Image 1: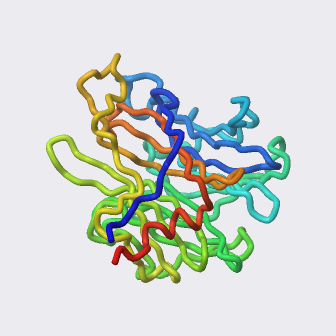
Image 2 (image 1 turned 90 degrees about the vertical axis):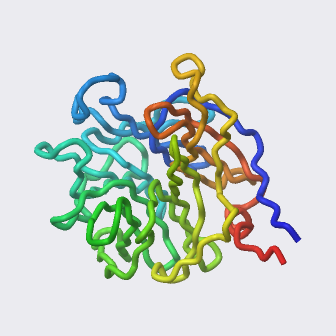
Image 3 (image 1 turned 90 degrees about the horizontal axis):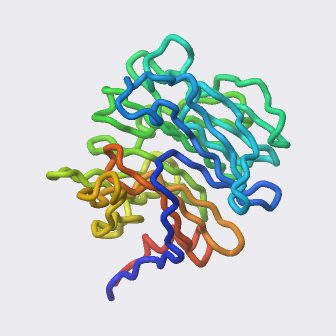
Length: 305
């Protein structure tokens, strides 16, 4: 019996922009946290141009209204609703570092989207690495922070490591054997806890004339031993027939489906991701899965026999 992939519906293209986003539900409202990079607004400028104006905003999905601008001088921000609070984590640029050479993650919390706690540092890089994307999941007993590192001791860029906390204040890095991605390219992670498993969404790279990036899925019960979905079961796959930006780049077909983030809301799983080519041509895309998050994840691991 052949494996049948989950069906994604209501696929939509949301514009020629690319940013790391996080969907979440706050007081019954579907919201998006959107990172923005001011340097990206000015093509051709040096990479560090206006970098300290990078930051994030929170938007109501239904109305499109901006609800908050939590901080600037940060990037790779994510948000979770934990214990009735909004928990915001992001990479601090500081004031003396090159662009994206992030060496610490900071956290703020809010219970009203208006007032935020003072930023506190929850994780610092070692002397060899910079920090990039992050994600948080809660397994019922502890909070798990996944962080993306370029530590050369672990292999080629990038690798995922983990830290844990029971109170969101004191974080402990897990030993180096608690890792995902050694020996292969991984990036753009999402981490979720469902039915006794941590589910990891990650970007995989296939080298070729133009390069190719699809999102895949793995799972683990202990963050140390990981099971990849069987070959041929990409979580999201680029549509190579789609021309991402016909006006700017009519010859560039989609070869990327990255930075997938999702949330369960109103009986469906809502997904956002970036298309394009990973080289400056991109768009934000959206789709829905009719079912629960657990049903969606487990579908990639069912037996096909």
